[in-house]
Image (cartoon, rainbow, N blue to C red; front, top):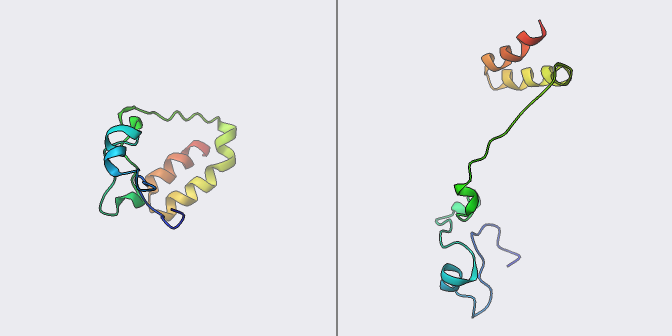
Length: 90
């Protein structure tokens, strides 16, 4: 088990079969396949939950980091992103 890097579920021992996990033991029946466990998890209740991030910064807070944000935006060639921060401090 310690050598497994990516798996949707790990079944240990002769009595821990995949159908046990599918129908009874608790892990979801829908597991990532074909190597997708490298970047996907098994289907779970979070997939059916809507989430929203709420961001609130003051002028003082943004002033401390605005140059870094502008730098990252420029590195990604997202000039409108950089400008949307820059104009707040002109």
